[in-house]
Amino acid sequence: MPARAARSLESPLPPISGGSDSGATGDGQRARPGSNGIPRKDPHKMWGGPASGRATCERCGERIERGLEFELEFSSAATVFLHEHCFFVWDRERRQGAS
Image (tube, rainbow, N blue to C red; front, side, top):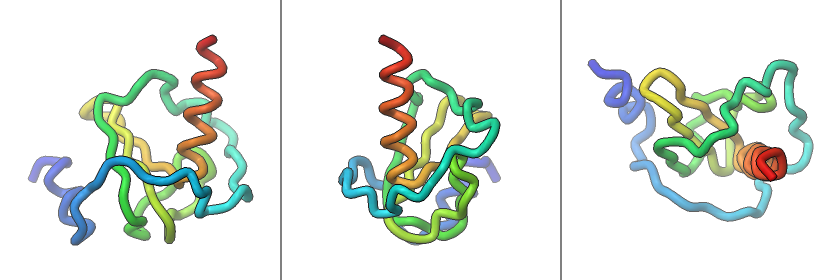
């Protein structure tokens, strides 16, 4: 089974785009060593939706158990999951680094 199809079976909810900037996971997440490996370029595809409880945040290393989770696909071999708050921190940091 293709990897994309396997991921879609993990959650009974369809992926959605968008979300809020409420910071539902709070400000407690800290970047773990090596999280600079998250690409700074725009992802090819991105989904956001209710946390499945199965993914681990690439930025802070904690399981994404509640709130929103973001799935960023940079290539067929590089997919990253982030808490809602971690996504916005990553996005701000990469945009500031590009200017």
